Amino acid sequence: MLAGRKYRLELTPEQAAMCEEFGNICRSVWNTALEQRREYRRRGAWMNYVPQAAELADAKREHQWLRAAPSHILQQTLKDLDKACRTHGTSKVRWRSKARWKPSFRFPAGNLITVERLNRKWGRAKLPKLGWVAFRRSRHLGGEIRSATVARRGGHWYISFLVEDGVLTPGHHAGTPVGIDRGVVAAVTTSTGDFHDREFVTGGERARYRRLQQRLARSKKGSANRRKTIAAMNRIMGRVTDRRADFCARTASRLTTGHSVVVLEDLRTRDMTASVKGTVEQPGRRVRQKAGLNRAILDKGWHRMELAVRNAARSTGTEVVLVNPAYTSQTCNRCWHVDAKSRKSQAAFECTACGHRDHADVNAAKNILSAAGHAVPACGDLAAGRSMKQEPAAPRGVPHQLALELVGIPPAPAVGRKSTLP
Image (tube, rainbow, N blue to C red; front, side, top):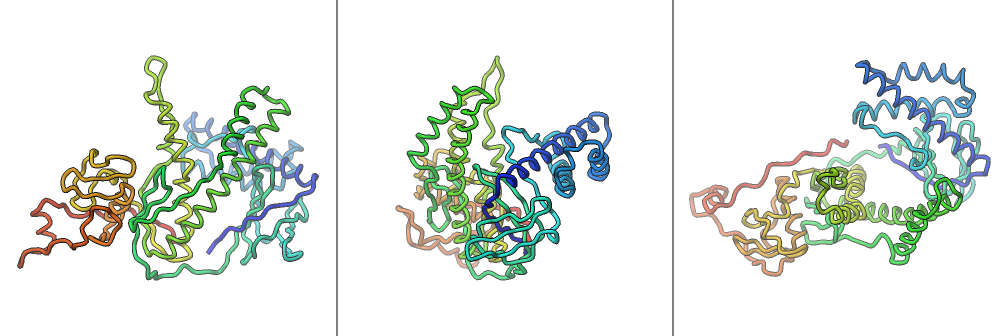
């Protein structure tokens, strides 16, 4: 299967300047091609990769600055734009801003890349027009190189190799299914009663980041002090991002190693974290509360966790299932009664119909698992007021499902949408 290997580069000043120039050229090509596509759409016509690649070759003959970058990374930029426009629509694809976009470019031809090991800690790679670049060899490459992406983050340059490691996805997993509820207090809660969470930013980092935000608000746009302030803020957020990525990878590895099916809610995180829209005449309601909720959701990394689970599932053969998230936190897992008043607080759940008590997140995780068509045990959980007895048996001669319907318990929800990953 295809796997990624990311390393930190140690570039010379000349190589760093070339990488910065390559990134700026790719950004210009992206923005120019996107504007051309939008103009064609306004006229009712269509523009795709093939004519734009031909026009790029003509533009390189006229403009000297386009020749500085390798041709195949510019062509790859057009391919990425074509894929983005076909997936999301031309009008929804974003511009690459000079101030906000992080420079990156991809070498799509793996046969043009040579990697050598220097010693136990260091290696080097030969890239077109960049020559030999040294990188911190933190792990074995372990496969045939298909492509390489160079990107800058937090003041450092990194290279990511896409390799074919030859590993096949297992066809069978002996574990049990598990439901996952993602929250703002505990990042991950499982239907078995396990909680996975950690702090991604320390108190000192939070205070320093706030002071840097105040300094940024008082600095002049385009000044050297403003650039230094932004660099310091990026260093802090870079450490926070690394901790979040490490937590998601470790948690996803535990979940996919021990369970054959991982059931998640089909959450649209981008829509959930959108700001409250309003007008001058009728401004949005509870804007500050919504902003706090958005920060909490983004801090816990809901979407990153889903991506980590999908990636880890490729190596273990675990099946990833997405279900409808509607009413999972308001439904009693024992009697299936839906009532918003059953959730007394963030952590307490007490059914208003049958009196069943459970941790609110654990109850939601069990509902998520049940929504995928997997049975949840009737005993053995960690609920404080839960009986250890099994469900009462059906009367003799009456099917068990019919007996549940007679006492007012509906059948379990239908199976959710399954992952299409290989």
